[in-house]
Length: 217
Image (tube, rainbow, N blue to C red; front, side):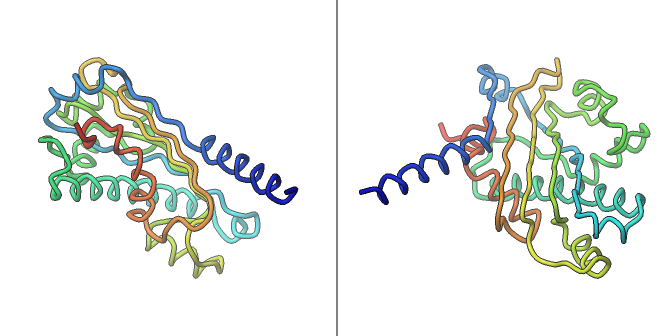
Protein backbone atom coordinates (compact mmCIF):
# COMPACT_ATOMS: atom_id res chain seq x y z
CA UNK A 1 0.00 0.00 0.00
CA UNK A 2 2.81 2.38 0.96
CA UNK A 3 4.69 1.49 -2.21
CA UNK A 4 1.62 2.30 -4.33
CA UNK A 5 1.34 5.71 -2.66
CA UNK A 6 5.01 6.40 -3.30
CA UNK A 7 4.70 5.41 -6.95
CA UNK A 8 1.60 7.57 -7.30
CA UNK A 9 3.38 10.60 -5.81
CA UNK A 10 6.37 10.03 -8.09
CA UNK A 11 4.03 9.89 -11.08
CA UNK A 12 2.38 13.20 -10.08
CA UNK A 13 5.78 14.83 -9.58
CA UNK A 14 6.98 13.59 -12.98
CA UNK A 15 3.81 14.83 -14.65
CA UNK A 16 4.20 18.23 -13.03
CA UNK A 17 7.85 18.40 -14.10
CA UNK A 18 7.04 17.53 -17.71
CA UNK A 19 4.25 20.12 -17.89
CA UNK A 20 6.52 22.77 -16.41
CA UNK A 21 8.93 22.25 -19.29
CA UNK A 22 6.43 23.27 -21.95
CA UNK A 23 4.78 26.63 -22.53
CA UNK A 24 2.68 27.45 -25.57
CA UNK A 25 0.91 30.71 -26.41
CA UNK A 26 -1.50 31.11 -29.30
CA UNK A 27 -2.95 34.48 -30.29
CA UNK A 28 -6.76 34.19 -30.39
CA UNK A 29 -6.72 35.78 -33.86
CA UNK A 30 -3.94 33.56 -35.25
CA UNK A 31 -6.27 31.40 -37.36
CA UNK A 32 -7.99 34.33 -39.03
CA UNK A 33 -4.72 36.21 -39.62
CA UNK A 34 -2.97 33.11 -40.98
CA UNK A 35 -5.64 32.74 -43.68
CA UNK A 36 -4.17 35.81 -45.39
CA UNK A 37 -0.57 34.57 -45.27
CA UNK A 38 1.02 33.43 -48.51
CA UNK A 39 4.70 33.19 -47.58
CA UNK A 40 6.66 32.81 -44.33
CA UNK A 41 10.38 32.91 -43.57
CA UNK A 42 12.43 31.19 -40.90
CA UNK A 43 15.32 33.18 -39.41
CA UNK A 44 18.52 31.55 -38.15
CA UNK A 45 18.00 30.77 -34.47
CA UNK A 46 20.14 32.42 -31.82
CA UNK A 47 21.99 29.44 -30.34
CA UNK A 48 23.87 28.99 -27.10
CA UNK A 49 25.96 25.90 -26.43
CA UNK A 50 26.82 25.49 -22.76
CA UNK A 51 29.89 23.30 -22.46
CA UNK A 52 31.63 21.99 -19.36
CA UNK A 53 34.60 23.90 -17.98
CA UNK A 54 37.07 21.23 -19.13
CA UNK A 55 35.66 21.41 -22.64
CA UNK A 56 35.70 25.20 -22.62
CA UNK A 57 39.43 25.23 -21.83
CA UNK A 58 40.18 23.52 -25.13
CA UNK A 59 38.22 26.05 -27.17
CA UNK A 60 38.72 29.72 -27.94
CA UNK A 61 35.94 32.29 -27.82
CA UNK A 62 36.01 32.32 -31.62
CA UNK A 63 35.57 28.52 -31.71
CA UNK A 64 32.48 28.76 -29.51
CA UNK A 65 31.11 31.66 -31.52
CA UNK A 66 31.44 29.72 -34.79
CA UNK A 67 29.88 26.68 -33.14
CA UNK A 68 26.84 28.64 -32.01
CA UNK A 69 26.40 30.27 -35.42
CA UNK A 70 26.46 26.82 -37.02
CA UNK A 71 23.93 25.50 -34.52
CA UNK A 72 21.55 28.39 -35.17
CA UNK A 73 21.66 27.76 -38.90
CA UNK A 74 21.18 24.01 -38.44
CA UNK A 75 17.98 24.58 -36.45
CA UNK A 76 16.75 26.99 -39.13
CA UNK A 77 17.39 24.36 -41.82
CA UNK A 78 15.77 21.60 -39.75
CA UNK A 79 12.67 23.73 -39.24
CA UNK A 80 12.53 24.41 -42.99
CA UNK A 81 12.75 20.66 -43.69
CA UNK A 82 10.02 20.01 -41.15
CA UNK A 83 7.62 22.35 -42.97
CA UNK A 84 8.53 20.90 -46.38
CA UNK A 85 7.76 17.37 -45.20
CA UNK A 86 4.32 18.44 -44.01
CA UNK A 87 3.71 20.24 -47.27
CA UNK A 88 4.58 17.05 -49.17
CA UNK A 89 2.16 15.07 -46.99
CA UNK A 90 -0.59 17.61 -47.59
CA UNK A 91 -0.55 18.69 -43.94
CA UNK A 92 0.48 22.26 -44.62
CA UNK A 93 -1.86 24.99 -45.79
CA UNK A 94 -1.22 26.67 -49.11
CA UNK A 95 1.70 28.82 -48.00
CA UNK A 96 5.22 29.04 -49.33
CA UNK A 97 8.19 28.51 -47.03
CA UNK A 98 11.09 30.70 -48.07
CA UNK A 99 14.35 28.87 -48.69
CA UNK A 100 16.82 29.65 -45.85
CA UNK A 101 19.52 30.43 -48.43
CA UNK A 102 17.34 33.17 -49.89
CA UNK A 103 16.53 34.46 -46.40
CA UNK A 104 20.24 34.66 -45.56
CA UNK A 105 21.08 36.34 -48.87
CA UNK A 106 18.38 39.00 -48.52
CA UNK A 107 19.42 39.79 -44.96
CA UNK A 108 23.10 39.89 -45.88
CA UNK A 109 22.39 42.55 -48.49
CA UNK A 110 21.17 44.74 -45.62
CA UNK A 111 24.16 43.78 -43.46
CA UNK A 112 21.94 41.78 -41.12
CA UNK A 113 23.22 38.55 -39.58
CA UNK A 114 22.56 36.33 -36.55
CA UNK A 115 24.35 38.79 -34.33
CA UNK A 116 22.41 41.95 -35.11
CA UNK A 117 19.03 40.68 -36.35
CA UNK A 118 17.72 41.28 -32.82
CA UNK A 119 18.16 45.02 -33.50
CA UNK A 120 15.38 44.90 -36.08
CA UNK A 121 11.65 44.61 -35.48
CA UNK A 122 9.66 41.70 -36.94
CA UNK A 123 7.96 44.17 -39.31
CA UNK A 124 11.32 45.43 -40.61
CA UNK A 125 12.68 41.94 -41.16
CA UNK A 126 9.48 40.75 -42.83
CA UNK A 127 9.55 43.73 -45.19
CA UNK A 128 13.14 42.98 -46.20
CA UNK A 129 12.28 39.32 -46.76
CA UNK A 130 8.98 40.13 -48.49
CA UNK A 131 6.99 37.62 -46.41
CA UNK A 132 3.75 37.67 -44.43
CA UNK A 133 5.19 36.23 -41.22
CA UNK A 134 8.55 35.30 -39.72
CA UNK A 135 9.58 32.47 -37.44
CA UNK A 136 12.45 33.18 -35.09
CA UNK A 137 13.76 31.76 -31.85
CA UNK A 138 16.44 30.84 -29.36
CA UNK A 139 18.07 27.46 -28.87
CA UNK A 140 20.14 26.33 -25.89
CA UNK A 141 21.92 23.01 -25.56
CA UNK A 142 24.84 21.41 -23.75
CA UNK A 143 26.09 19.55 -26.83
CA UNK A 144 25.98 20.54 -30.49
CA UNK A 145 23.33 18.96 -32.69
CA UNK A 146 24.65 19.70 -36.18
CA UNK A 147 26.70 16.80 -37.53
CA UNK A 148 29.73 18.82 -38.57
CA UNK A 149 29.94 20.69 -35.28
CA UNK A 150 29.42 17.52 -33.27
CA UNK A 151 32.25 15.68 -35.04
CA UNK A 152 34.60 18.67 -34.83
CA UNK A 153 33.91 19.17 -31.14
CA UNK A 154 34.20 15.45 -30.47
CA UNK A 155 37.67 15.44 -31.96
CA UNK A 156 38.63 18.59 -30.12
CA UNK A 157 37.36 17.98 -26.60
CA UNK A 158 36.71 14.26 -26.68
CA UNK A 159 33.02 13.61 -26.26
CA UNK A 160 30.36 12.13 -28.47
CA UNK A 161 26.72 11.15 -28.33
CA UNK A 162 23.33 12.80 -28.48
CA UNK A 163 22.32 15.98 -26.71
CA UNK A 164 21.35 15.53 -23.06
CA UNK A 165 19.54 18.82 -22.60
CA UNK A 166 17.97 21.27 -25.02
CA UNK A 167 15.59 24.22 -24.77
CA UNK A 168 13.93 25.83 -27.73
CA UNK A 169 11.92 29.04 -27.74
CA UNK A 170 10.31 29.94 -31.05
CA UNK A 171 7.88 32.63 -32.11
CA UNK A 172 5.73 33.53 -35.10
CA UNK A 173 5.22 37.25 -35.74
CA UNK A 174 2.84 38.87 -38.19
CA UNK A 175 4.51 41.01 -40.86
CA UNK A 176 2.09 43.94 -41.03
CA UNK A 177 2.11 44.92 -37.36
CA UNK A 178 4.70 42.68 -35.69
CA UNK A 179 2.06 41.11 -33.45
CA UNK A 180 3.09 37.87 -31.72
CA UNK A 181 0.89 35.13 -33.15
CA UNK A 182 2.43 32.05 -31.54
CA UNK A 183 5.15 31.24 -29.03
CA UNK A 184 6.44 27.83 -28.04
CA UNK A 185 8.96 27.13 -25.30
CA UNK A 186 9.98 23.60 -24.51
CA UNK A 187 12.78 21.96 -22.57
CA UNK A 188 13.77 18.36 -23.15
CA UNK A 189 16.19 16.24 -21.14
CA UNK A 190 17.66 12.85 -21.85
CA UNK A 191 18.10 11.20 -25.22
CA UNK A 192 16.41 13.48 -27.75
CA UNK A 193 18.00 12.44 -30.99
CA UNK A 194 21.28 12.87 -32.78
CA UNK A 195 20.48 15.56 -35.32
CA UNK A 196 18.63 18.89 -35.61
CA UNK A 197 15.93 17.12 -37.64
CA UNK A 198 15.34 14.60 -34.84
CA UNK A 199 15.15 17.41 -32.31
CA UNK A 200 12.68 19.51 -34.30
CA UNK A 201 10.49 16.48 -35.02
CA UNK A 202 10.31 15.69 -31.32
CA UNK A 203 9.70 19.26 -30.21
CA UNK A 204 7.06 19.98 -32.84
CA UNK A 205 5.15 16.71 -32.53
CA UNK A 206 2.45 18.14 -30.27
CA UNK A 207 2.98 21.85 -30.82
CA UNK A 208 2.07 21.56 -34.51
CA UNK A 209 -1.51 20.74 -33.52
CA UNK A 210 -1.88 24.32 -32.36
CA UNK A 211 0.10 25.97 -35.14
CA UNK A 212 -2.42 27.52 -37.53
CA UNK A 213 -0.41 26.58 -40.62
CA UNK A 214 -0.51 22.86 -39.78
CA UNK A 215 -3.38 22.28 -37.35
CA UNK A 216 -6.30 20.12 -38.38
CA UNK A 217 -9.69 21.71 -38.83
